[in-house]
Length: 243
Image (tube, rainbow, N blue to C red; front, side, top):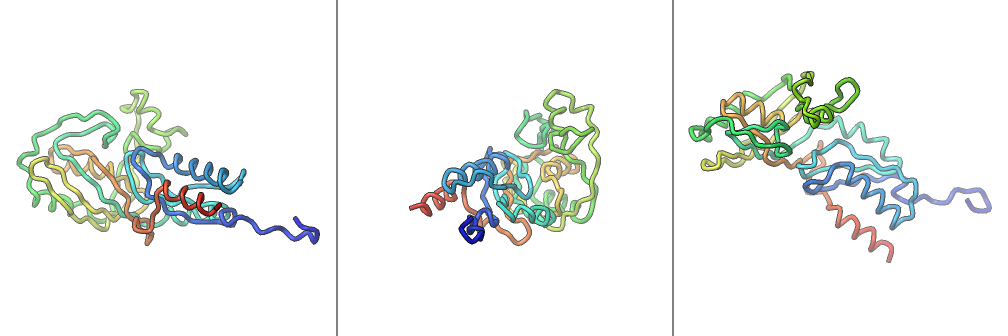
């Protein structure tokens, strides 16, 4: 404060910024938040800066992660309400307990007879409002504890997940590999949709089993991956701003 008791201008990140990151593979959403907090302390001297993310993205997923700082953290809930878009890679013929590559692959059924047309027709059955069961390996609370904690202790069979209302309003097959029986699909969906569960349920419905082999979140509302920066570029911007 100066002699006239007028508050000095705050740093732009304290006033509030919304940063769209392209989350790298194997980073958790909180890894990004903690890294941003560290960088703002290091380059801007902000010791008590508020930083939060607007919607968890699994470690094995990449793509759009919205991070808010300062006063913009008050807008986090509004971003979480937005629709989401993903590009998912789904592998037929096997399952995993986590519905993705976090856990061991369990061969289930020969998928050699499945055609591209079979996949397209099965995808159509998932359009619209529906009930979906979250994966046991998820942060959904069971008796106040994240379900994945019980799953990692080998007690996944004891966990009873509650179905939740979701909507899938867009499914577009992008690629189909007839040899590997792996395909890519663009998914437009409501908040709360688990793409891992979609992959698992698809495998059950088509009769071969399936799991999520890769995932990229491409949009949150109108915020696109095209607008995203990497954590490396963000650090570079902060570093150069101090010169």
